[in-house]
Length: 428
Ligand SMILES: Nc1ncnc2c1ncn2[C@@H]1O[C@H](COP(=O)(O)OP(=O)(O)OP(=O)(O)O)[C@@H](O)[C@H]1O
Image 1 (cartoon, rainbow, N blue to C red):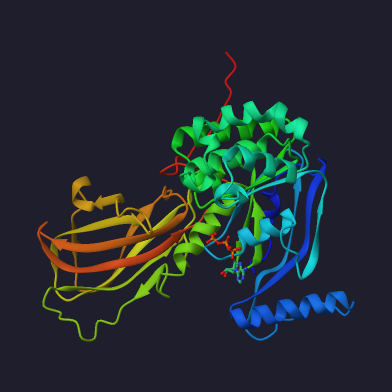
Image 2: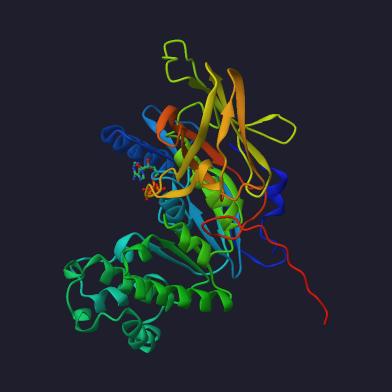
């Protein structure tokens, strides 16, 4: 588990005075991968509960695992909280526990108000009932009387924009139509807390925008929501804070930019080699005939210390270590940087020759310094291809994939690159 550092604390939303509407306290939930054992444990748990012998659920039985492991956080009135984590990290399970659909094995959830869960597609609709029947069933489960539903029905229908399909069985709906109806009926129950699990992902862009506008309005009226999405942009545009879960554990809570950076970094680091941010090469079996071999690639700060992870906006030197076997003239360096996990587009292409940097290098061991002051890559994981050429054409040596991470020390504007900024107000 990541330690809560100073930055995280300083980046926590500063709304401590507002009312807590949801408090998740040390919640754990265990599941079993084995169907037979799972059924057996289910029967065992029911029997123990009936007989008042229910053991503390803090131990795993064979084939069980923690889908949620001691998760705690709070949600305040009018707060929009994004919930992020890899597939299977426990996000939906957490929402189900909060909605009261499943019982935690340890810990408890305190809710102050009405919770409207919009979990998975169709928000729990019955497929053989019509949209109309489902609205009545759904809204009454959420605590509305028939009269209240009658009064709101037209508004729900208008918001959902599904027209005549309202009288067809929900099983004939597309996933987008079911999501529209689910969202429309949930927001019209006047909830205090909305739980939104990926339902917006299936809507078309226009409907998603309409949902986000409505969510902003609800927030202003004091409604709180938890939004689960794999779309980071949605968290940026809708949420003021975010929680990061990994393997059922609470990892961190903070501003969207801090949490998404942390999450995206972890997402890609899993797939990258151990030599991350520095690489040392053995050139024992390499031919020396080209006159130069790359020995290492790394970053150094201005005093020469090796830095594994450069920080956006800070000065850094990218260093190419090389062993030169003969005097070389007209050497140029070519660097191509792309984002790991991106579309493969080059985010930064540097050809030293273009800006007139063509080097002569004597035999011996050297480090070629590229001073970046500051480094303007945004926080993320990158792959760099390094090519050293002679006479602009022949390749002396190259390194295909140098992986490195760029970190950030503070919250940053979300953009394609970092722009150093200084604001001033000048009196005229
Ligand atoms: N009823 C269940 N029985 C057994 N295992 C379950 C059950 N429900 C969920 N799990 C497991 O619990 C873990 C957490 O699942 P959960 O659906 O909460 O993850 P998630 O973060 O919502 O994932 P995704 O992003 O893919 O929707 C997964 O390993 C999943 O397979």
